[in-house]
Length: 397
Image 1 (cartoon, rainbow, N blue to C red):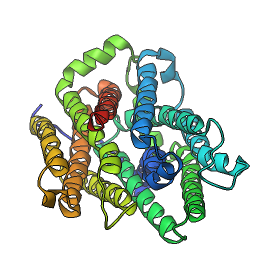
Image 2: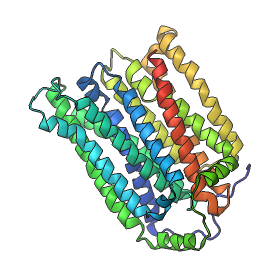
Image 3: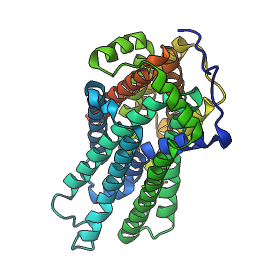
Image 4: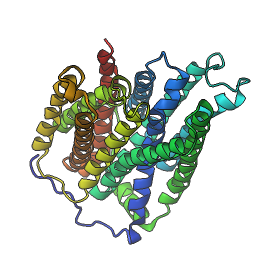
């Protein structure tokens, strides 16, 4: 699998790149709720100061997301539902989940953030679970569909997922900085933040209904209907997984490393006397900026060697000793600059290598298996997310 042809000889013209832009925006919408939850770290830590909220969110979100992917793999009838229906359902679930935190505050009889109604934390975690279920549905459907299209659409989806982090980080910085740094100001800024995110998700519902009407997408759909694709099954899933076991391992190890460090370790374990509660927000912003840079780079430079990409993914295990040294090593390594540099490298390698492997893997198998290979990749990505979010608790021990 050293050389892979990335562009189809009969690739259609995407007039004004509208289809590309819609894939980008839907990709952004796919991860926007998750980024919204973890970037509001100051708000949730103020509400629940004794809880490891980022780590709880990670485990709840990732496990529920992977469960949906497993259902999609094993349940044959899912493939009979339309992409449009799955995206509409998933984005609607996103909207509901992000409404929970503001609604709890609005319906609370107390005006103080410290006095939370009984069961508020449980409802918030339940909303995170719903958000994870929606992510599995939207992500699996969107990436599976993009796997059958020319490479630029997969790149657009992953560049979109990375851009969601930047959008949310900028939004959180603006809302936090524009209001007084008081409990009331924190509450209002968080509500405004969630409301803007919800408006973006409603726009994604509109985009998902417009996508199938584009002439270029209708042409691709006609081609796909002419293909003799068999329905996804567990047996075929593992048969395809065996063909792309290298890229699947690479994507798995990428997210084992990333999720065991980000966001839990970065948000909870690192402190700055200078930046105080701005520090985790800034680090998350740096990570998201680096992730977007890496995923955008594949629009211009995609290596032809899957093997080299897999080895590069494996070398990311070196981030463990580097972050350990920053946490327990010499005092100068515990300062903001080394941590910011490492966080940037973590995000950049995550974004670039993820996009490379997700572009190359579906193009390395026959066209009839390209959608399933993309689902295999997103499933192993999900396994990595779950494993990484669980390993992240070892920083606490």
